[in-house]
Structure formats: C-alpha cells, structure tokens
Length: 132
Image (cartoon, rainbow, N blue to C red; front, side, top):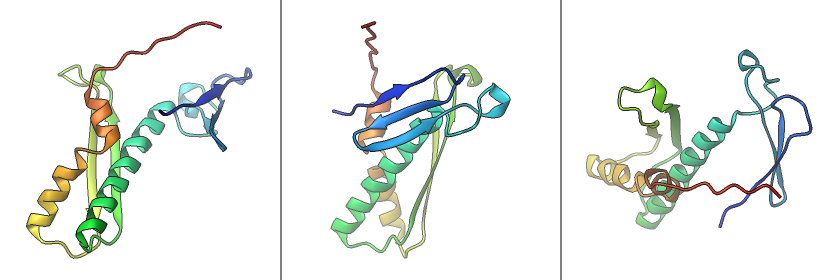
C-alpha cells in the first residue's frame, strides 16, 4: 500500500509532502499563482509513471541480459478538457542508449505497458475523503 502526507501551512499552494522518511515540496508555477517551489501535483503523477516504467524496463532487461544502456522515459499529461476524447492522456516516449534488436524493442514496448502505475492509471479508481 502506498501512502503520503501533505501539509499546507498557509503559503498559498506550497505544500510539504512526507512519504516515510522522504520529504518533498509540491507547488504550482508562478503563472498559476504559486511560488514554483516544487513540482505541481500533476508533475508528481507523471514522475510516478515515468519512474515506474523505467524501473520495470530495467528489471526485465536485466533478467533477459539485454544491453539497454540508459533508459529515459519522458511523460506528458494532457488533461481531458484539452482532448477531444475528454480522457486524461499520458504520452510516454522511451529512449534506450544500448544496442537492441527490433524484436527486443517491440518486447520492451509491451513490457512498458504493464508497469504497476500504468496498470493503476488504466483502471477506474475511487477517492474516499473524510474530515477528521
């Protein structure tokens, strides 16, 4: 189970995040009224997908002993209100610096689609909120 704690102490959008022993900041860009002290929440969502994809690909390539070299995953989120489909859409591009054959690249593309965050984002979710 994943979990996080967010604390906003009154500075418009700047929010302290704690995940276990790790500390982060979320904020909004200056042009959205934030202080740009950290990534926006949507950026963290993109980071989760990009990092999960890279980790999944590295684990698979290592098991297969494939020379993928460096793995770079770029993720961009286009929100549903900007898409004709109305769906939030994540555009992912992957780059490998290693020596790969065409069939290996095709297989890695298939593997990229089964990382846990990719699968999570493709399923309907519920958000349950309570005031304590």
